[in-house]
Length: 312
Image (tube, rainbow, N blue to C red; front, top):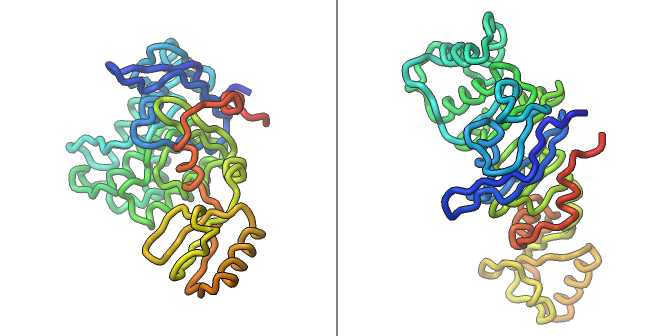
């Protein structure tokens, strides 16, 4: 099956800055894929290349087999992008904005789908409001609508919930999940890592223009399996002082490899005669995995292998 997105050795340089330093990536049709990384990692540059807003210095990018440079008309029809920045025309209403966006793709009589988008994005009451009168969260909803107005099979969401209230965030993700279930490929970039953990089947992590980790979400979590213990006590037993990951006054955070180590920790407290005021446990989450991976810098052969399209 033709990959939804295929990126081969893509590099882009801005002056002395290597925004992308040879990225290889394949996303299968129907995936819900996460693209994560700190600011400046190269995520938005990669998205801009896929959308035709920036040209790569070398390499190729394809959307469902259509090259974004040599076959750009087909590639752009197949792609919908929700940009990170709030970009809007202040002279039109919400409905007019979506109608004009439909026209860019040669779509006529698209009113039924526009009405559906307004409903799912909770914009029906604002359909005839001028864009400049909307709040930041409302404008971001319109950006999502613009990206989906031509029903693209591949959808890229670049920080779609930044500055969005909790209620919209929940309804937006329910809508996007339904699109994914209907066969749309979703590529998500977000700094809300709990969203990526809950939604994405596979995740790529970028740093300094390179992919430094790529695997299924569950495999990434299992690679760094363990427990985080939050313990409030006057002090720690001497043999556990080196295991402290963080400290806030009398509250210590320790990383454990297993529940067996928790038993040893409690035994050490008893032997040292130290009373524990409070103790809580948490499993490894994607944020911890992200921080640990970002602390490294090398792209492994395994990462390069996993950049290939997953077997169906």
